[in-house]
Length: 344
Image 1 (cartoon, helix red, strand yellow):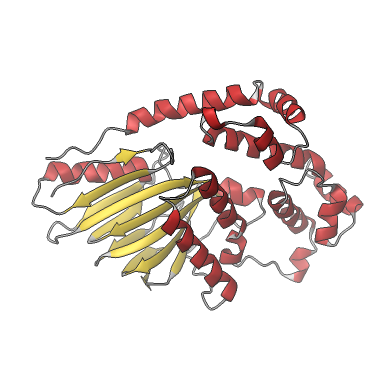
Image 2 (image 1 turned 90 degrees about the horizontal axis):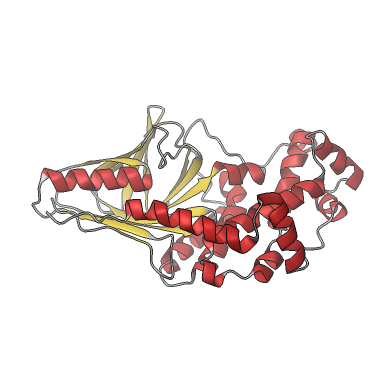
């Protein structure tokens, strides 16, 4: 077996990394190195069918809070690394969709075959096994469970979940994910981040988490729905309790009581989400491109000075200093994973 070298990062896409594997009469060392890279970079244990000639390549991009993976896989098995390593997938939800070929997936002793056009949602906190017995192209979204919690979207599954592809809305989201992967290599990091944000915003459509009427009237469900509204409207500087309540068809006073029961006010939650979103944008934007005014507006602040003051109060440093520190830390982590797979 022969494994070609891996690369991580480009100037236009600092969150991009690619590794490839080609069956070419190599040795056990190259197979082991490929498996190590799959485990350390992508959190997946990989077992190769050494009796079959094959080629596999995995490319991953950061897309806002998500990781978008476009992979061509053949004659191998994948399962999540279950130890809590830096690559552990247990804090994420995985959306897999088959673009061509087919795969089988097993979880909880139940096996399903997924052909081209199919989708499956997997919670990697529970062990699962993928098998690729032909050349298969899949697109995968790795979605932080915390991002789903913040939006009031279901973030844990006991079993595999198969979205209803007969639904025009689900089919449209599937096509949108395919479109994003198709253009990920060519478009700017800024646009890719926005497309990733949109994928996350639409995730509740895929998981089909519509509450019953009784649950919709409960305080807990209302708080979750309010968080979804806030997440979608985080860039609106005029967002108020009244506007949020109007979209939810409840009174502003009732919405405030629901939030106070959880120990905060609606606008304090909005404020916290604005700053959290700003911190992520700062960490993901190259320092030389950081513009406090633009980030302030994207996060719903009316002007850059108010944003800078609020950010420093929350994080202890000015926005530019935060961006610089975050990217220095990312550079140190990246230098540990930039070593290529050697040709042997």
